Amino acid sequence: TDIDCNGLRCKETYIADGCDIKCKVCYESACDYPENADYPLKENCEYGCDTTGTVEGCDTKCKVCATCVPNDCSGYELDSCPDNATCESCSVGCGNTTVYYKPIGCALGYTDFDDYWCDTDLSAFIAKIKGDLL
Image (cartoon, rainbow, N blue to C red):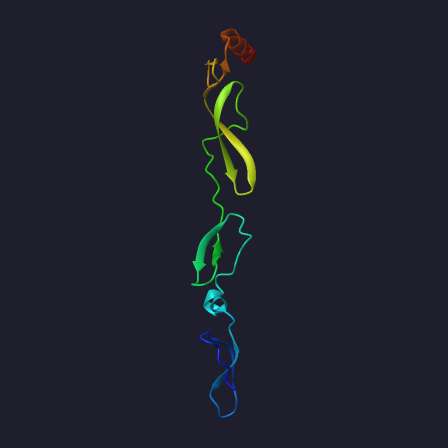
């Protein structure tokens, strides 16, 4: 006998000798149709969902997980912020937890004597320069 699927499509069919194709098993929901199988519910997308699909009457599902695009930290060349400087930071992301820094000025009350050598006392800077020359 042919099963009535009550408005849903037939999932499995059979053919008896000399007969037309008959429905053996019905889909339980339109959400289970093969064209909706491309939207498996992905809950473990590490970087979120890039492409979603919604089938009317079904949950929104993730079709394609997003891939991570690392941040461009090329202008951030230091592993730490210099003493008494203020810095911007950049994290590469995508599983890389390294943070790089770029000085943008000196902390309040400090003077930039040379390429973010931030100090309140010019004599400390002069002592550093003398030490570098020795």
